[in-house]
Image 1 (cartoon, helix red, strand yellow):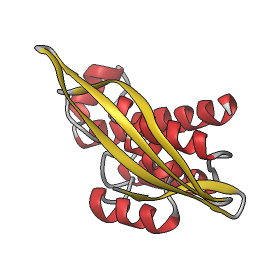
Image 2 (cartoon, rainbow, N blue to C red):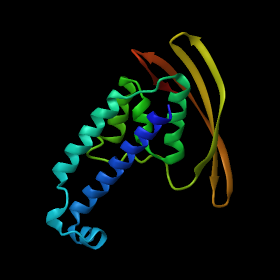
Image 3 (cartoon, rainbow, N blue to C red):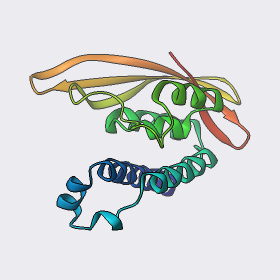
Length: 172
């Protein structure tokens, strides 16, 4: 499980890095100042988009091995504001909805949430087994701001087994 999470984090870091390279490719003078590399040595926008698409396809092959792991990965997206985690454990229909909402990963940042409030912690407040291949899990997020705590929120996830992996089918 730790290896899976490390793989997802590594992929997310690479995607963020490539996305930054796309931004720098658009403004070469900023790229030169930041990376100290000549503009002709930078990855082209087309190259970066193609690489992001490769990572996108790799993420589609991965999945959570347990319902608990799916929940933790989903919650990690909220904590880190990284939508790649949501996508990684979403079922196919939800993945399509995510792409409709956020755009393709090679064309858009998948940063979710805002700088404030941020998730201070979260708890799984209810986990109900519906049957051998379906769970309903409620997560309570505790939010913080620079002025102090903010109102907690909850999300209820419908987690299902799809072939050999667990995924989030629905979010309420």
